[in-house]
Image 1 (cartoon, rainbow, N blue to C red):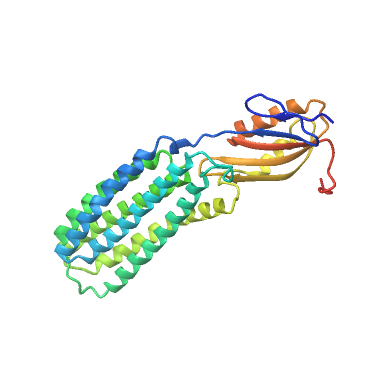
Image 2: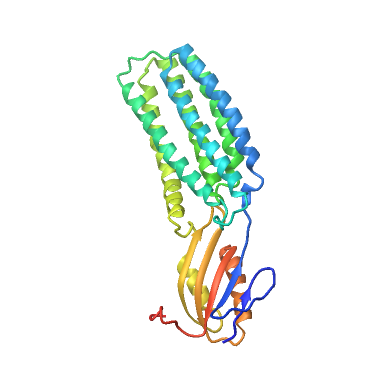
Length: 315
């Protein structure tokens, strides 16, 4: 049986046993150019947290203090996301052969967990204020929360374009969008309290906002946990990939098919293809090109077999 090793850089190597093909794609999407967004978000939001804490203490508003705590959790989330984006650009070493791309997955997971804890803190604060006895200086609350809304929405918009292609950017986007929602909710609550005097509106609006944030966070948590467990990324249909390989001329079976995310933007694939082709090199080229063009998988490793191996009796 002919042995061949196909690589994107067009050099061939002989092997003693089975045909192997490796294709590597190293695009990191927004990670390569997006670090400035994390820096801008960190500086602006950290400054606002300080201002919000001061305004909360001055006005006696626990709502502003709670919102400041939530904003601070998002600053920490941005720091993790930005740090992970920087790590993902670093080259791997002898022991870290995949580099540091997985740091983006861990940051996305930490972001989701942090959001849930922040929601819990807000819910506890709101529950303690349901008696409606707390006095709120609604004017100061509305002004500061309004500034917070503009800052958080502006920061979220920095990540909006890449939130569907990069889970790490999506985590940052959801974090800042959640803050914007909290801020506008506080503005609305302040306006109602200003005109009606119903201070109980503040905790009620806060609980509604918490429910909205948790609804949006569930998807991020699920996706980041799946990637941390080396599951196929969301939107990648593994059975469709199997069918596409089987549809290649001469391929009779596909086994040991594995698809996982190396980072929040890069996907890897390994598979064994049983075939009867006389041109294994051509089959490797076709398979790699199909995986990249149809499924956007830039790192593929394929083993070609002329017949089922003893370790795969069901092939």
